[in-house]
Image 1 (cartoon, helix red, strand yellow):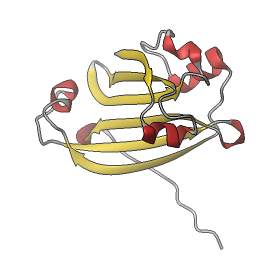
Image 2: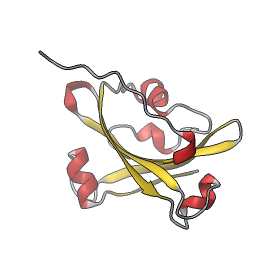
Image 3: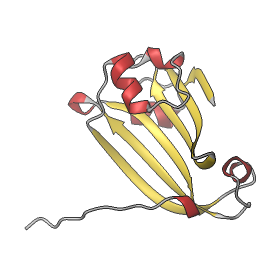
Length: 140
């Protein structure tokens, strides 16, 4: 796991609605179940919105719950997209899969009260350990 404060990239600043080069907290985590790695997450949060996360213990912790308890931030909405990709030579060993194996890549912008963007997420899931389910409704 990596947890560091660094300057925001231009793209991150734009999505988080902060000034370019403002401080952000980047959190890289390898998530697993029953000892099997299933997801590599990279999360970027504006430091000014949740400075507590720079030093919070996130081992085996739910990020949204930690945001709520440590920073008083509730995530109300998330814009999430999911695409298919393949594992590169850096990701594959982390997830315990072969280079070129299928992965699902999720990109997220999570919003708090009033539509304020709180975090950017990039989730890379093992293709053989992730299932997406949804109930879809059609508006009349």
